[in-house]
Amino acid sequence: PRIVFSGIQPTGTPHLGNYLGALANWARLQDPDVVTGTSSINYYSIVDLHAITMPQNPATLRQAKLDVAATLLACGVDPKRSVLFEQSRVRSHTELAWIFNCITPVGWLGRMTQWKAKMEGKGMGHAQVLADESLTTGLKMGLFDYPVLQAADILLYKGTHVPVGEDQMQHLELARDIAGLFNKTFTNVFPKPTAIVPPAAKRVMSLRDPSGKMSKSDPSDFSRLNLVDTPQLIQAKIAKATTDGIRGVSFDPVHRPGMSNLVSIYAAMRDIEIDEAVKECADITSTKDFKNRVSDAIIVKLQPIQSELVRLQADEGYVRKVLDDGAEKAEQVANKTMEEVYKAVGLR
Ligand code: ATP
Ligand code: MG
Image (cartoon, rainbow, N blue to C red; front, side, top):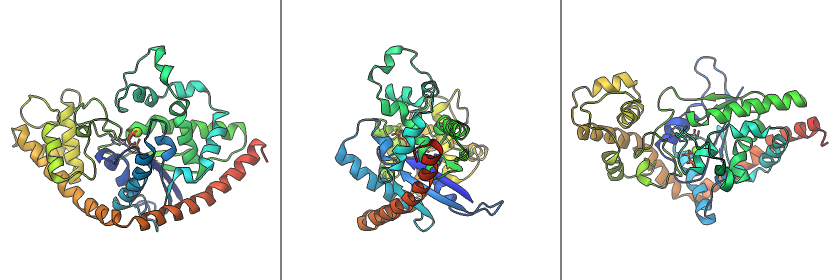
């Protein structure tokens, strides 16, 4: 079968980018493949050890983990068909990361763009990176090493398919390389995982600065649409979203990044192609009218997720139980892989 692994950081509340880039696929991948009929085993993790690569407040982090778990359930992750768990509850994630650290060249990590973007306090969208050496002054080992831990997360379960947003493609490529390097250095233990990126809205951009991606850790709440935002707030955020002075609706990410971001969001909310979305809005000349249409579509789409979330948040005991069961199941699989790894390396 297909082994699906993916993670989300409890660094804040999940937003529309997380949903369209990753979470919508998480739910979908629980069903057998429509073409081949292949069924899958799904592991979805709240990756708290990744969250602490940036400063976190302990009480906030603890609460965020529960909130993210409830949100994942509300987005359709089904504990009967998926193993939903907190990363730090399965200790082998860090053990395997250490073993990978011992074979991974530092140069491979130096090429990653995420730590640079995070050091600049920006989302992953900013490919333009400081060449400045002084950049590493405040760089923590954990933030630099994040992609190795991510490779360990996936490979601990021998993950073959990884549903992520486009910003994670570089890290996934690294995970493939690390799997290959381990197999070549020792014995063949790991598959090479493949990314599953949605055809549209794989990178939802910030509402304030459409040159960067929408991020949980962006200090401005108006840069993103949280899945929990009220209809009023959604409307206000879209009304304030950065666009341009050009009349009419069109899709041109280079010259009209803000407008194009809204068009992609609109298309994704309505489950239609970009071309179709542009056609639907051909008669609209005022940006204000277009924005109203976009916020209406978002409000309608999020409504069922939000009401399910309210229900789940009133039942913390259930959410905790799901996480306990998940950790237990994940650990069993992880322990098996680690036995193979220890043997291969010569630690047993
Ligand atoms: P942070 O700012 O703390 O890194 P984040 O918003 O980037 O938070 P993550 O927890 O790092 O969220 O990523 C969870 C998943 O959401 C990943 O698969 C990632 O690729 C996807 N994702 C994150 N942001 C976007 C976005 N703007 N568009 C599409 N997918 C996204
Ligand atoms: Mg991120």
